[in-house]
Image (tube, rainbow over all chains, first blue to last red; front, side, top):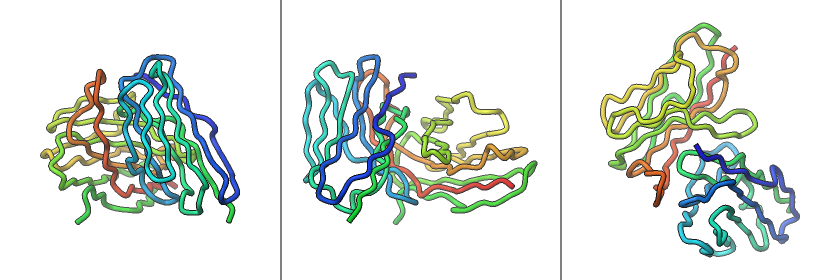
Length: 105
Length: 118
């Protein structure tokens, strides 16, 4: 099945800084999903993107789907300590490797 | 009420033993999954069931045998446990099976079962 590649693997930021994780595919994606897993927790669905060039916002989180539907990004503005966790992109049952975000207060 | 529940939460056992993990969802979903998450947090699909029927079996050793007695339950039995089986196992469910050609369906994950094989 299609595999999605995710970068960076780790990101450490100071509280208040912005954060972005990227998801790429060599083939066109019909949809892309984003999940968050808190330390010691389980993945929790955040959002799904379906349309080319789609942009969705959830408070400080902005999700984008590329025009060619081969890449996606998750951007967090002004990170908070509650944003700590691993962020995964996924296509159906295929998950990216995740980006582990740590936030220094 | 917990949407997707798993038991046990922790499982410590010795090599060569056989163990089972149970999963139940009360969401009325048609599709259930088993994932393995290794120490590097990589989340890999193992099995997918749709309406009690096995849909996906991802190159998992045949020591792993899923069983779905009904739509709300998907259990995982593991024979002859090996050190490399140590991981967190997540059960998940979704309303329908993603077709692969269009709209996907969000998955609801259980709390996970941390399996340690010594």
